[in-house]
Length: 165
Image (cartoon, rainbow, N blue to C red; front, side, top):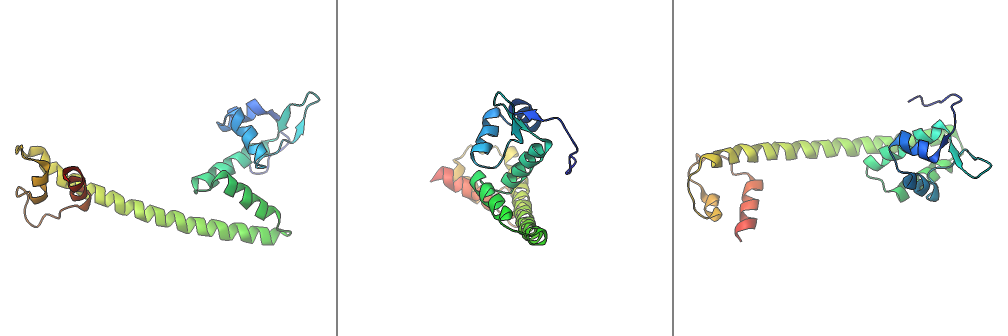
């Protein structure tokens, strides 16, 4: 979407909801939380929104993907509005995005480690598919069907302990 929209027709709340994938109730909730403001109202009181409302909702969605609650989004928007010069506001935004990028990279690294741990567990459990022993699951903790040097995945053994104790 163009971040600098040209003169576009104004959208009623239902149209804005449809365009953003939100409900009309969510749009009104955003208004109540001071996250979104109609550009104007019709003579009969209908709220009308510009294309910037679509951009704002998409930005709010991104902030929520970063872990923000709507209250935190409102506080963040308020703090940005309180900055009186462009360079100061842009530096605050840059600093914020830099911190969030670091957070995202750390989460990705943790998820990659988890994926490796899950892959190792699945690989280990593949050997269990050919097991014909009908013993209690607690005996799986000392399985002798795998070579002794085979690493015993913590995820597997923690689960076995949980179901057998």
